Image 1 (cartoon, protein in one colour):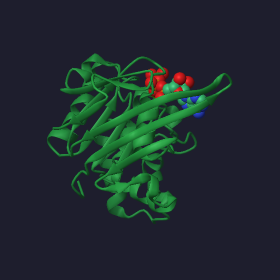
Image 2: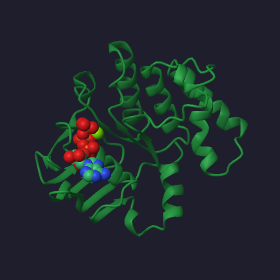
Image 3: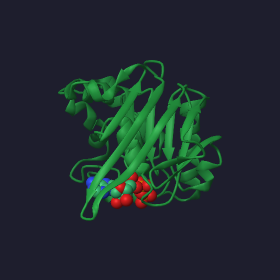
Image 4: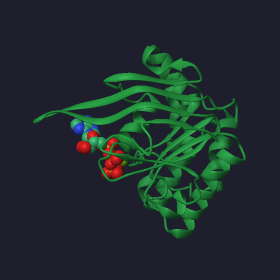
Length: 235
Ligand SMILES: Nc1ncnc2c1ncn2[C@@H]1O[C@H](COP(=O)(O)OP(=O)(O)OP(=O)(O)O)[C@@H](O)[C@H]1O
Ligand SMILES: [Mg+2]
């Protein structure tokens, strides 16, 4: 890992969507502090705001109100291009629906974040991408990710999230498409990324096999965190 994980601090965070019937508060978190290197699971019913929470703390979604701070940097006051660059190198994000490019190979999908940086892909970066794909057991020589199973696609998404060796990993249902064995392997990987390597890993999941490995958890219900509205989550 290139740099130490930054602490996460959330203040007065609200995400409000305009519905036909009026405004709907999808997320409301008054205070949340997560210390560097934490391994944290978020559960809750469908529609309770879990993906919205991950988008908001990654700076992929502008909250209606409040602040998200990573290592003292307030996302809401960072200029967009600087925030995008910062995110690529700080936060690996595994999307619930993968966000893979169907016309590209597994390797090209993993290397995609480098193309957003206008970086020519160095040999070292390509080797890292291949090492990640091999490590996750993905048949990476296929011409297109469309030819992969959903579970294999899920692991391509995880490999891509780790391309730049980010100190933070946010993963939205990362074992939902995996069978028990593959799910166990990914769960172990996520645990190691935090416990062995010191990354902050925040996982949204319904998978008991994954959640049961993670000591620190909170539940989102209708956008509100339980057990506490004000939380200090330490390693
Ligand atoms: N762009 C949007 N416009 C309006 N409402 C939205 C929008 N995005 C999300 N919502 C609503 O916000 C709420 C939270 O959605 P979110 O996707 O965060 O839930 P979730 O907990 O991740 O659900 P799931 O477990 O099904 O993935 C839902 O009621 C959803 O319909
Ligand atoms: Mg979701």
